[in-house]
Image (cartoon, rainbow, N blue to C red; front, side, top):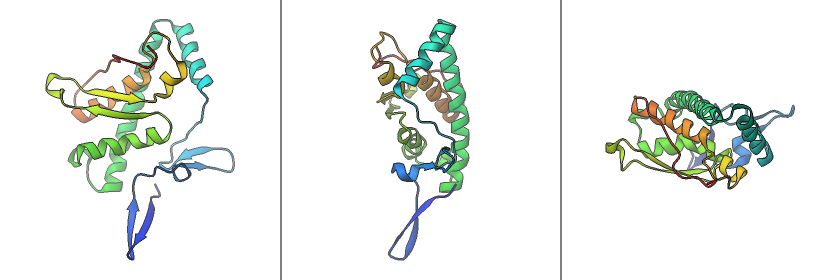
Length: 181
């Protein structure tokens, strides 16, 4: 992974979190799109997201939400493992030794830069076994609109996997409120 640098007072400093789209996305001559982490990307329209969700629900019925959750969980599991390795390479420390808030924001920023939305987490109820995540501008919810039910199953799975990895025990996630309700 190539990191951008800046020179300040003749000292070179690594720029870790790249929020500028022109630095985050790498558009290649053959039409391929990758992010700065080398991950292949795909830009899709809201119509694509809606069509994909509707097609799954029509084909799978009630099982669609569980399958989307499981897909999100697997996505999160793979992503947090890759992130843990990148974090050591980039910052020289393991994620469980880093400042927790900074580490979580560093994990999330590529999602936000890719259009998955912004988030806020609340760990104040963790002793009761609860972690709250507020998601803003969900790519799924804003695409499907008000459909009278929760729609962000991928996100629920993603967050369950990430917090399971960090807690070193199996956790689940449920969506209790959604823009699409």
